[in-house]
Image (cartoon, rainbow, N blue to C red; front, side, top):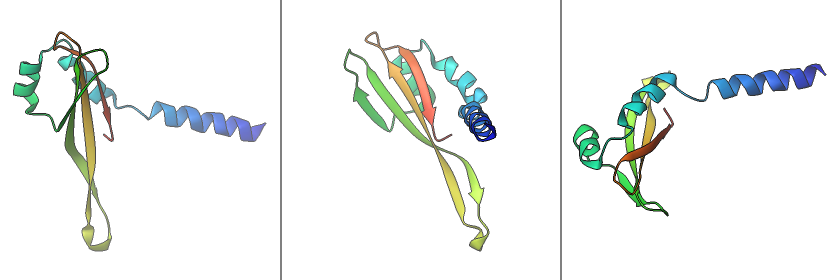
Length: 100
């Protein structure tokens, strides 16, 4: 019984830490913006792919901080990937991120 309670607690804790509320809030400003505005604001995307029902998916790769390790103070950068989904009307319909 105690073991299952610990497993549930760990699962809830890891699920609560999976998203960055500050990044979630900052990505909402791109909702409803058109491609020209996004390209002016963020620059050209690193990758573009088409979506099945029309529109595109734009991917931006950025470096978001990092950590310095003890052996010779190696710096390991955190790579952040921002993903913007455009609908058929060329407006941002959804956004997500990973690795941030």
